[in-house]
Image 1 (cartoon, rainbow, N blue to C red):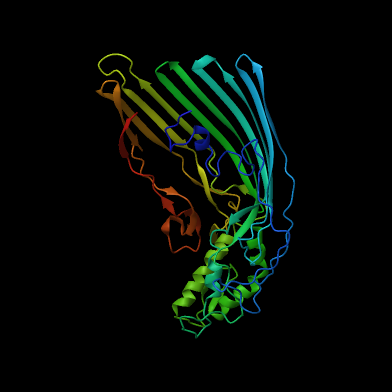
Image 2 (tube, rainbow, N blue to C red):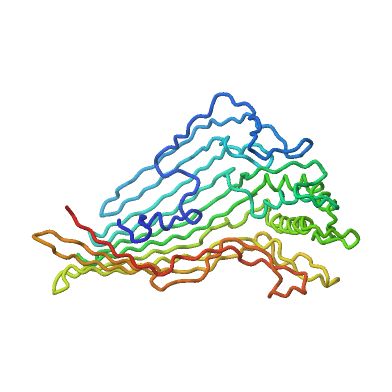
Length: 440
């Protein structure tokens, strides 16, 4: 099946990175062929190019030997019922050995991950003019490797915060806390399930239509548990570092300049902001089950083209396509606060919102138009000219990807804060592409 969008088959378009298709298991029915790790592994010496913990830091650890051997199973089949009807099903397991090139927050290595998934479906052919496919999938993965959580980079900023009175550019905390890894990985458990529908129709020999839809439900459980455990274990020393810089952490866990210990050095303000940003991110790290970050609930792709077979414009082909993307998860609202009724100068947790309340990127759609016409040059030789217009309706609204905190309605006089979309990108503006193809 040809597809207009991004040069990918429709099934792949529906299945973007975190939407519908089987995330953990490999494509059926192939069995994963991961290389077997060395029979023995020894702790790696610290690289001189790497930020390593200082003596006495709680971040030091030893890379331990990890068993990375596990059998997996995969089975699938197709049953042709007859009358154009066929049934198919597939079950697959995968095992990803420990990747010793990756680092965790404590300079260890992520554990191996395991996953399994099943998908099954029905395909019906109504002669050469209509094909219908319906399928369902279910999958789960344990200890899936992911990047560090949003805002975790503020830990290093806190570690670099100078003590009160130290205005040097290379100063740091006096608690002996060493550097964090430049970047680290964490783990989570995830599940997904959904449906996919696909239709290909040829109402006329020169008219073709394709339609596919995807509906997904995916979740993450106990996400970023290593970073969460590290923050809990090192909370006391991080608070001491902030206090050493002349910054006061109130009963509401918000860092503010301490009037009794003024610190005009810019490093103090940086540390104060880093603490508050870190706590906002920590509020969304929970052991329960959340909607999977970057999950798109549903997607649709449609395309149709028609070629004239008679008249002066014989051979002219016109087409139209549409990509629809449903709402996408971009964050959570565990850090939202409201004004404290007992003290309007302070904020308290918003009881109506928590780390399971989702922030969505709004749904949108893009249109594409195509035009093709063959031109005879000599003999039976032809050149096919094709014009493609992408983002036909020039969709120009931002597509948000992450979240942050701000005062409600921009009112800085209130201590309350609410989560809102922050970082974003734009789709490519309306574009025209003209190409010519000649068959030799």
